[in-house]
Each structure stands twice: as C-alpha cells, then as structure tokens.
Amino acid sequence: MDYSRSIENIIENTLKISGAVLIEGPKFCGKTTTCSKFAKSIISLNTKQVIEYAKLNTKDVLKGDYPRLIDEWQTVPDIWNQIKDDLDKEYVFGKYILTGSTTPGNTEDIYHSGAGRITKIVMNTMSLTETLESKALFSLKKAFENNDYNVSDLNSETDLLYIAKLICRGGWPLSVKTHDIDDGIEITRNYYNGLFNFEYSENERFRSLKTDTIRALLKSYARNISTEASNTKIITDISENTGRTIDIKTFLKYEQALKDLYLINNIDAWNPNIRSKTSIRSTPVKHFVDTSIACAALSIGPNDLLNDIKTFGFIFEDFAIHELRTYLCNQNASILHYRDNAGLECDAVLKLNNGDYALAEIKLGGEEQIDEAARHLTLLKNKIIEKSTEKSPKFSIIVTAIGPLYKRKDSIFVVPLGCLAP
Image (tube, rainbow, N blue to C red):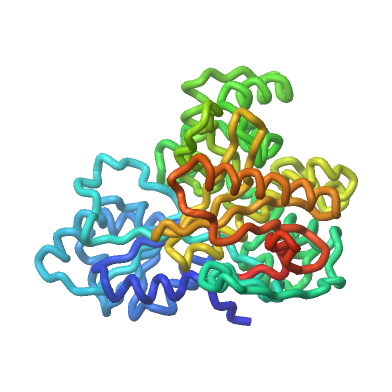
C-alpha cells in the first residue's frame, strides 16, 4: 500500500514559493519515498563512491530535470553553496529538493543560511491517521475554526494493549507496512539496534562517539521521558544506572548528536505573560521524535507497559505529543508546554501563528484522571483570562488512550488518540 503523508501538501505548496526545499528528519521516516513523488530526477549520495564523486564534481550533482532531488545532501556540504549560487544566477521556483537525516558534519563549509532560497521542513514519522489506524473523527483544524464543534463516538474497540503495541512499533514506514503489529515491533527494534554504527559515518563528529555512551544517554532520556529533567539529573541518572561518569561538556556533545540525528525532540515552555507572583518554569520537556525509540532504549515491550501503569502514562504522553505535533504541521503551528511553581500544568499548548491556541492535557483514561485533567485545564484557562493579556483558548482537550470521544458539560473535549485527526 502506498501511504500518503500529511507533509505532502506542505512540500507541494513550498515548491511553488521557494527555489529549494530541504526535508529533514530521522533515517527511515520516509523522506526519500515521499519526496520522490515530486521529483523529475534523483541522485542519492548514499555510497562512498558517489559521495567522493560528488565532492570532486559538485556542480554535476545539480544537473538533471527539475525538481531535482538530492538525497542525503549533507554528505557533501558544498552542495548547499552550489545551490545558492545557481539560484542567484537563475531563480526558479521548485528547482531542488534536498533530504537529510543528520546535520552536516562540518557546517564551516556552508557559507550562507539559505534564507530566501532554501526552505526547511521537518518530517516526522507516521501518525495514526497516516497509517490508517485512527478513525479521524475529531479534527483539530475544525475545532479551531468552529466554536460549536462537537463529535462523539463510543470507541469501544480500542484497549490499552493495542495502544501499547502501536507505541512500541512506532510510525516507521517499514514497520507499518508489515500490517502485523508484532512483526512491526521487531523491525523497529532492529532499526534501533543499527542506529549507532558510526564507524564508517561520513560525519567525523559521529565517528568519535562511543556507542555505549550514546546508548546510556538515550536510555536516561527514556527514563525521564515527558518530564522537565535537568541536565544535572540526566548526568546523575547515567552515573547511578551505569556507573559511567560523564561531565557536562561530554553530555552536551552527545545530546547534540541525538538532536543532529533527529532522535530527540524536546518541547519548550509557553509563557502567556501572566501577571502573578507565580514563577513559570522554562525547562524544556524531554520528548522523542518517535516513542518507539524510548521503548527500544529501555528494552520494554507492550506487556511491560501494561505492568507498569505509571511508566505507561509518561510513555503515552510522549506518543500523544508525537501525534499532536504531526497533525499541527499542516496548520503552521507550534506545540509548547506550561508549568508553574504553584503546581499548575498543561501538557501541551497548541499555538497557531495567528495567536489562536488550545490547551491539552494527556491521560491514559479513566474518570478520575479525566476529572483531574479537566480541573487543571479550567484553572489555567481562568488564570489566563484574569491575569494575562492573552486571548482565551479556542478550546480545551483531554487526549486519552482509551474510552469514548465526547464533549463534557464544561465544554472540554475528551478525545481518544485513535479518534484524533489534523
């Protein structure tokens, strides 16, 4: 089955207004397959021989019918400069498509930002809507546009085991195409185990990394998933669980490597300028580009999640953030979080560029958890209205793993993740 991706509309529209489009994201998230739909010629810089040729004959890489797709362009950073020069001589919309699964090894070889010529787009792994595993009954776009929006569904066919399996499999296209979740989980584990073979990497910075250290850091990130764990806490956690001592300089080096590989994707804090003595916390919340990476790092499967509901809750929050982030990409929106020193929190603030926003809490489900989440959302909404210059949220939503889809009497939506849609 040829799955369509939500990013396709963005790529198509961006090619109409930009000379070149750069699609970034983790390996195997489907960048090349998706971008191939828009290309009339392709060159893949994925072998040593082709890379060496491209370094010696960089201008030749640009030759071909347009749009010209240059896959893994970062292996030859000077391509960036050649594209800039080419577009300066003759600016044509939709001339080049670049894909990259890491940042360039040596950014000193890039002499300009690409502003006005190359537009960057980040591609996520597949969402449940893209894998056709969401009913897609509750549309975030429609909720933003329609104050009277209301949908409902019993959603009785979904259980926690199914959700746990979806989390452990992830949204990797090859894992999804098996059409068997258990087989997909094994494919994802194999993907994870092959992530850190840097011995022959074209990126010199990666070749210097120690596999044991990067795995230890990724595992610590996974243990602190969906929290505001500080750098110091992560370093201490690594020491306590591995006996390995690393300093802050080493930590930052390896953390940057995880970012360069597009494996972690933290969300920043939202500051609504509330007039209050309460301090708003600004530490980013730890999140992954795909929750399956966290599960693989911890060597846990679906049954492990079911046997540890507390951990399942943190893991599910990351999964929900992944879905929300993917669904918002078509709306030119950002996702943030809110925490203050008074204990008031909001797992996700969905903020559009026009200033509209929505508040979201994330819970596994159950009446008690939903009521608690609703209380937090109501308190925060009232605080914003009374003590901030921000407009009121367009809507509030509680994202759950299981249970029905409905609108509460307090107008807060309760939406199972398997019913969510862009």
